[in-house]
Image (cartoon, rainbow, N blue to C red):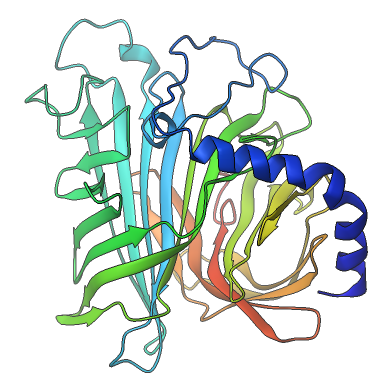
Length: 386
């Protein structure tokens, strides 16, 4: 960490981060606590800041408009010279026009899923997607459902794809895609990381733009990835990152997309940074956090600054993506580099968006490799609509 980062953390962390860390640890251990079921139709960070409770908040929140579970990581296979990156994302979107229907056939929610594998050796991205309807009834109770989500724990099924909490506490992702398959287990190694203010992450100048947001970084990975007919087992050093967010109003006016990084640092720390971007490339809002050992520092507005330094133009969509960034945070000035450029994902057959999602490496201000994780960039091919 450079002098700037050390100075900022030393001055502010004692007052702000110890309480956040204790809160995160305590909530993660709450076990059987459940949040009150009543939720207001008009929400803001000022009018509603219900504490997160686990395992309840691992599950779905169907009264909210938008929700996603997002797992990214990399597999270090013993028989391969380079890592495989992977991402598995499940989305839920409430359908406003069907909420009052009493029919069990009504699609009250749509579930989407994206999965992709980044092959660093061949510099290729292989991906697939799913979409199906959910009546909102309890998991498995409606034969017409092609998808469902559990409310009391992580449990998602979308046709032949799933993300489920196992009896031993691990998460299991099973995906059968075109030319690839994932069967991966994820084990917690750290407490839940509550993003923003105790899990309420501000997303714009107005308080109604926010999400509930927690992360599970530094998750150990077991299992295997099959790519182009070849299976690779996850070896020592394979790590993942899970994000879970839900919101009624995520994008503020003027925002066309976002840039986000979730980085498992090599020393066990966790770095999150994001900006919501307008059509001119300016930051409408920004945020993030840095957690090291027993210390959590949540970034204030203006403390996460993204500066693109190298671009790549997609031959498919003609979108230009910044594939190298300088990301300034209170922890350090980081250089974020895509491991390879062609990691654009076309999801027009499900969510309708084209975005860039890929494995990256992170270097500190002394240009030392300090972390690996995922970079996500949306709104470059066309404005993002949620």
